[in-house]
Length: 109
Ligand SMILES: [Zn+2]
Image (cartoon, rainbow, N blue to C red):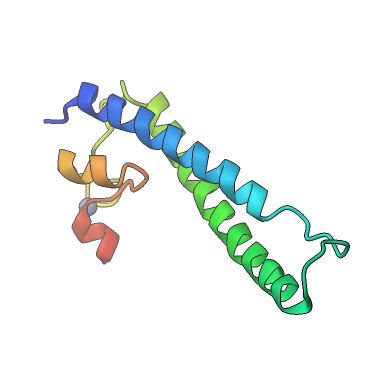
């Protein structure tokens, strides 16, 4: 059985954490100003970091979407049921990877 209170608390925590990360990535992916008093090498670094931050930002936003979907579906009796095989997903996995709608076996298949 799924412990919904535990799950809801963990979801709150993960959503807050992901929102903090998104804010950080947004800052890192802000446009690099050519007027910045930084040398060419560090400007290249800044552009490189920007690309990394943008990729991380996209991933974090997708994760946030899934977390919020799960949060709004907490009362759904199908919550915690693997979308592929229909077996219950262990609570431990739900808490570890609430963004995944699949059980371990199906996720790795
Ligand atoms: Zn499955």
